[in-house]
Image (cartoon, helix red, strand yellow):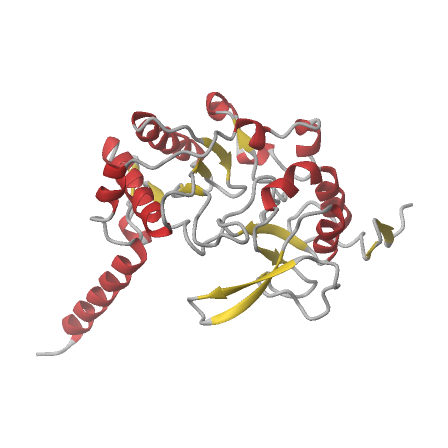
Length: 322
């Protein structure tokens, strides 16, 4: 029988026999063992990036933690970043070594969401990212088709990309970008890529930000930019079976399912390799015409907000008695 508590790299690990969450199919020990086994792969994906984590404490609802708690050990690296949305400083953790990764694991940190910028240059996003969200959990095949639309647009632009499962129901397409373009230009280019891809097959893909307008199509989400985060490669996800966001070769997309990659299966699949880092292209420069096109496309969240207000007003007016 294994002990419920132990120590690794000076980190006290507690209550290892507890179930992670309902339908996890995994214990806290499984989480710790998984993260320890893939530390050589996940730490490079986190290094230098302010980290938000999704934690699940016993008897509590899951929550995303950005600010490090007051009881965080002094040896955990950290960086303070001004959050424009909330008008306050946020002290994020930086996960750059095994000891810190184990500490986060012991905090029941299941999902790892790094910022898309790296310290100290928070003015530039390192990747252009398209988050492909299919209309249903069993529609992964639609996400695969949409990813190929994105790739076709990028290939036409002379750009290379990599793809991974989101660990939920969809896919993430990453394009490394050089530091030439400011944040707003990367956001614009991402909108333009999504719009071009949707036009290639409007029966499959959409850029409609309002869910009710998607009509059963794959949403090509271009909003992962600026202060946004995205689940890191190799991060577990808070889903039944505790799946993992996992790199997939473009040629293999038809042969995989998100459920293939879990905290139980991934270490053996990796066998010490790091396909995310190995397949990642060198940073690329954005096409000027693409940027210009993107600046003519409304920001999805802003457009959705105005549309929501318009619809609410129309509904109120329709219910007013004559």
